[in-house]
Length: 315
Image (cartoon, rainbow, N blue to C red; front, side, top):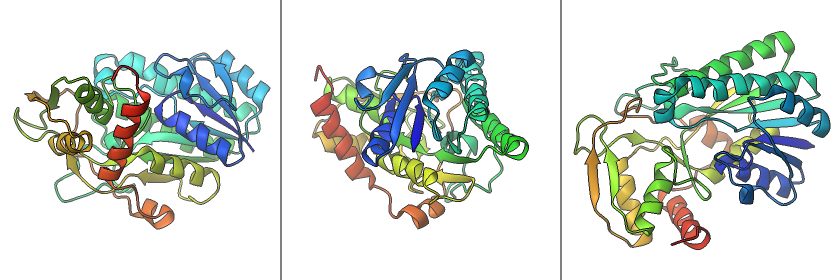
């Protein structure tokens, strides 16, 4: 079975590629290396340096590799960037994704796995509740709008062109290889700043000085399991949440990371960021029914902190 991973030099995509190779898939990776890192790509994978915004490149790669499955992880992933540069976000997440979908139609692709967002697509989730896939989408950022748009296109392509798909709505993913230098990925940012003896910032949920936004943090290993399960017919629902259902504030997260590293630092409280939700927690009951329990946050953060200490240079 041949698997093509878009964004396969990035954080999540490289883990999907690595695990698929271990399970016997033949794997190819597409990445433009603007945010992905070449050293993340498994040595056994075929690598195509290309940009999903260039449809001619994609069409040639599909013809050359002839994938059976496509795991579409490539994306502009920052809510803050999408607010500042909505056209850039749309160029990558909408036009680029449509290029991926259209290339699937020209080949013999059996299924496309789409990395969507549960952390942004539902809008504000009230206290005490968790968002299920039946919730109406209420995107409050261009990033969430672009992901929701591709979900709609996938349903249309399935009806009109019989393209099979699975949509995985991720909560806030963290783990080894996450980039600490962007504007998304608070776990990686906190780890990087603590290990380089810098202060960390808590963006307010509502008012400066509060505990920050509340999120559902899912370990990358659990996300990879969902991707492989979607490829292997273990997930039959067209859309599924990939999260834990456990809420954690940014301040709580900072303190857990401090404990993992046995390092204390100065915390500065900042105003809310445009586009950020105050609370986002997913209903993960379908995921856990299929895949079992997710990784405990403390354990996942310990493994991530260990990777940052051992693998990242300069610490």
